[in-house]
Image (tube, rainbow, N blue to C red; front, side):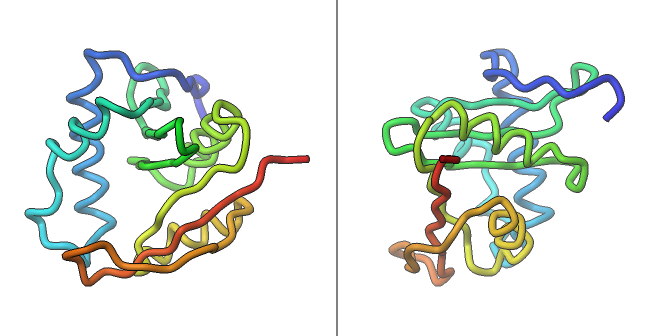
Length: 146
């Protein structure tokens, strides 16, 4: 990556840009969801209780990861330019921060994410469906390195 990649906690003035990235990636990736499900407000609401980290290159936000630390749960990992190692860098960063098994849920139709997480050492421990949704999900867990 030219200029290097910086990963740090999101600053309050970056909240809107992160919400925009979140919606843009949802629209590109979650094609099985109706467009009205892609809302900035969802990100902004969740970010109040989560720690959000950003990956920046030359001052530009390329991706974000949001964790809910009490449960060591990765709630969001969204990358604007996939295939450049940004997602792995964010994932490794938050895994170090939580110190322990890291878990997440991935929607079953999101095959690309499942391949990424399997490559990064996650395993499926549960399957389910959220109330009011017909989209199945998988709960994945990665144990910390021993």
